[in-house]
Length: 164
Image (cartoon, one colour):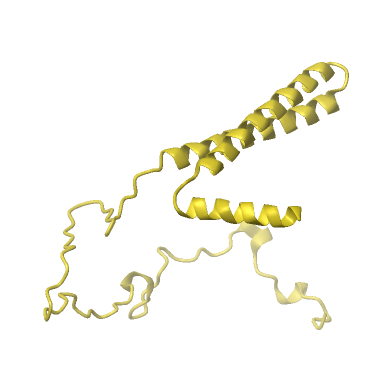
């Protein structure tokens, strides 16, 4: 019988919330915030009592206290958002540019075609080699006496069995 009463009450609360009556939600959030604040204070007091003798317990209590404090802050922030909702801005287009830029946001008139033109997809000319040109600047240096440890392995130093 108690479950039927609970379901009926929850259904009523859902109907009220969908109609815009958030009094129950606000009461719930403020109760949660006060409970979390009391929990924070209790855990912080316990941490203070253990300080000096039981550092592991102190650290555990403080960690839990700060988690409760963070949850309390988040709950109050949620309540503030419900009470004072942010204004909604409908932005049609955001254009961020460095330099001159023209933006035409006016809708096209019926029967008027878009002014966009099809353009060729041009490849990046900087990254492709043309007519035997090299992409790197300069030329490769030959191995010198001072870089003898970096020279290529010669035929004398190769292993006899290369199949490994």
